[in-house]
Length: 79
View 1: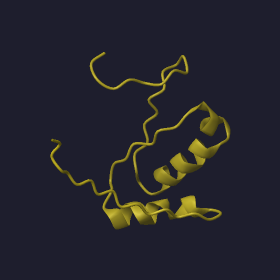
View 2: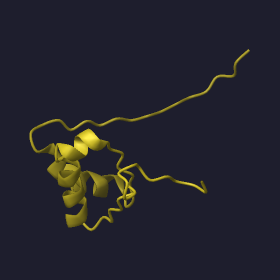
View 3: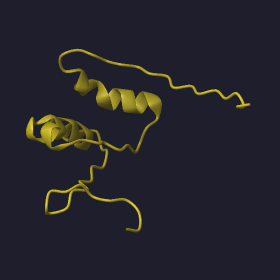
């Protein structure tokens, strides 16, 4: 018999033209100083990644690009 468990995942979605500009405010409200932005080639080529990272740079959040020179994604861990 499986033991019962609880999973709580509060979600807040801000949806509007230019909603990304509220990112610094939301990070501060939630007390978030570090975050992980996961993306792909399509979002990068569409300019979405640059828009988000420029907002993060502007509000004092460090942005590190984990791509290698060959365009493949970076790896975490000891591999």
